[in-house]
Image 1 (cartoon, helix red, strand yellow):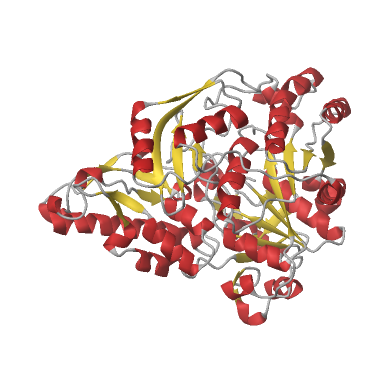
Image 2: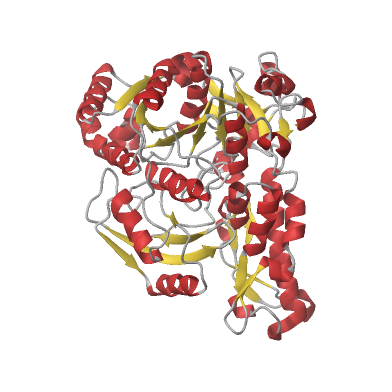
Length: 557
């Protein structure tokens, strides 16, 4: 525990008290110090109570600093508990890449945080390290098979597709050559690294219902092709058992708390710009069995996180469609999408709010495509003005959409009371006719085009020849009846990060594709998206330090 968390410990409740409040039996709680615990998977299936209602938090297209989606999810949970609803927040685990890169930590902010925040933002209980190890074990076993079988064995050395991963932004590892040197170093291969959050093992981990499902999905991971062109899986080189052994303890969800003592399950962490962007199915299912309401978030805006939550996560049948959706907006982001430069966002600009509302309007339309009740939450900042807030309220009223001002950063659950009441009314009173965006019988190219046109607002889709060949191969290999996970920039509705606001009549360019057979989806890469990010010119790591008494300082967020 850090010095700062030690100073907060008088306000944090022992983690066994949080578990007891939820009705979790003591034998199902494995403590990691005083304020963290893992919960035994037996707890997922106990009880028999009516499952709670799920509330999904998404956002409009963010500025580079983000719009406070995690902060809103945490504050809404505190608000619902204050309103007498037994509520849990279920969140993703932070990745070290953003912590040391541009975005900083991912535990909320102000008075709407999960704690102990530094522990959660750094190594936490070791889950992401376990996922990294399981992924790289498979890579080592692939190389080992190539080494001993040479070119005449099960795998074709020129058609192995399994890279390695690292939970850190490191652009120099995107493309590497392994096996250089003497023959006992293995076969020389061109390969590379992805960030752990983009690993298929991370996706498998987060979509598995239980340990048996995890092993089955790990075994289905495709690692390359044989010399006769047939796919080769992890099960064929007998890797799934050892991988599951590395993940066995990590598969148990992590229990922590908010600053107001609300329970929080934090588990799994795929990115939404390059993966499917939500916490584990196991944690969400566990929370639904323990609470009246479960608040969860999906990565980035509705075009990435929410679409993938509906078309990938809900399709698994392991979690229900949400009872309501919250779209987080800020006046800062509205002005940014209305043409205001980052350095001028704190200056009042009512006209830019109106122009930038076009971006939010598209995200409102996106949620309505899926037939779900929704509430827009205006996450307030100190520089917001009354004129801008009135403009925002009038624009929301013109869309006939529920909205509420939210000051959970400054006032915690009290500042989210209006939002909480709007969410409860939306759940209880508003019509819900949930539908998926596309049928699974569609060819992959049509699925991609449907997402691009309906959710991004694209006028055209261009799939490059390499990607087209891969998509056709996946279909020919029998994988056609799975959803698509599009990897693209989070900073625009389009695949061009510089196209702000609500771009129209643009072309989405699909440059590559990959199969995640274990996770159960195909990834279509658009534009210049990277599965191994790089650090910015001045990374957040430059400001992080530890004092002589052990207090970690400088983690943003």
